Image (cartoon, rainbow, N blue to C red; front, side):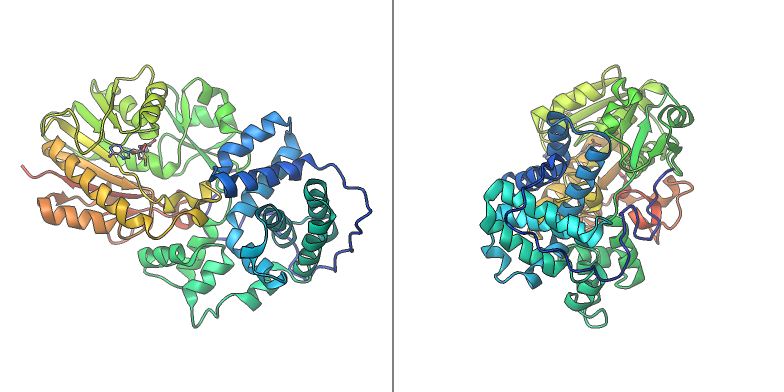
Length: 480
Ligand SMILES: C[S@@+](CC[C@H](N)C(=O)[O-])C[C@H]1O[C@@H](n2cnc3c(N)ncnc32)[C@H](O)[C@@H]1O
């Protein structure tokens, strides 16, 4: 069964909405239990906090090293990603239960408290087991003193369920609707505000968007055009054909490491959000007058969209040039596009080796805040800062201007970001259109069959409306 994100909170092992029975006091002399599953979760949370590591890179490595699989791996994944995603909400509750500010709590104890609070508030794990297992970990790693502190805090957390805590801690919905939705859906307020601005909705629309963004997403695959159909790929993988992309397949959330699937290992398919597929496809769908042979991907690493574009270009006798600034990401493009008509260039997209007007179609999949893919990067929402936006919009504008120079008159450029932040989306495109006189194409026409695309001309996809990441796509034509 495919998980879709069309609204309701989902895929979280929900617990009954009633107060927990008080947890048993855990005495200091009870021998700690070995708990490799929770130890993995704790170690990943620590790496994320101390080294700015990415949970979805560290976790699979630790699971492999410690030989955890099956239910143990699934539980470790749920606890790690869940606690990372919900950090702000968990901290609000922990802050209300601790006898000191959380800023004065040592990091490793805070990690453990978050892990315990996540189990108490957002899983079906019985309260006594959630508290005792966490306290055991702290005792095994740090001794009895800290274990007593963590025990006391978690016992207070266990006195109420998530809804009761939110009723006490969240700002009133009437007075501060965005602040309310931000806390109850575990998002920083500035990100909730960016969603509200893009949706022009502080009510049910915002709530649905944040809920969907807080749920674990399905894995999306893209079949390589010309190699395998989405129907064949769905049959091989046990997934469902995607609703909108002709190359897409959805797999159930948590269905193991998709990189291990045979079609992915054999490069017949790639892991790629359906929204990304749709944005790359939109570029290829706009009719052109004149030549249609040379395509450019100006920010191509690690190569997801380059594969789709190059396969489609190849089927009609064309080629793709792929530009990427970071050499190691250029290597990833080379590896991903093996066998396809692609030339990879390590270069800055603002200073490429190409003559103006060289290309018929250009994709600018610009570096961005990634606010549209937070559901796929558990800790990202707490790491991003509002100050990231200004630097990125400058770069985005410069890359889009460069693309409009590199495309021939009459050719088409797709500007794509994985973010709904208005400054990164319509802010950049409207500024560039004003400066260059580029024609804004009604992008909605090139997302056939996709509902709820708003008033155009650009397209903003959403997890709660489309089951995709919140990708933005604007199609521009260079004037003749
Ligand atoms: C959003 S990612 C592109 C994702 C890619 N299109 C895909 O589908 O797999 C943006 C990429 O742009 C690269 N980049 C950043 N600054 C750049 C620049 N000035 N010129 C070219 N590439 C740049 C980043 O290293 C990153 O790989």
